[in-house]
Length: 111
Image (cartoon, rainbow, N blue to C red; front, side, top):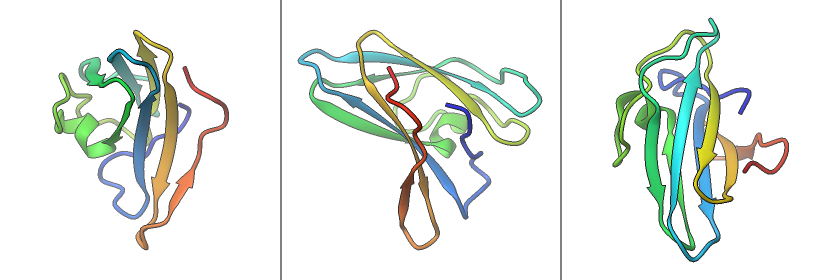
C-alpha cells in the first residue's frame, strides 16, 4: 500500500479494510515503512475471522489498539504498508474525510 496517513492526520483518516471471504480465519501481518524509508516498530499481527472483515485505523496500528499484537510506533511522514496473510484476502485502503465520506484509494486487488 503506497500511501497511508499517520495517526496525527485527523483531517484525512486512513483506514485499512481487510476482508476474509474464506471459511477459515486469516492471520494477517502488517509492516510499516515511513517516508524516510525506515521500518518502525513491530510487525503488527491480527486475525480476521472467517467470512468477515476488520477495519484498522492508523491510530490502532501506531499504538497497538483494538486487539492488535505489536505496534508500529510513530513514523516520519506517511506510511507505506506491506500486508501479508495466511489466506487470500482483500485489502482496501480507505480515506475518511472530516464530513465522514469515504474514498477508496486502492489501485488493484490486494492479496
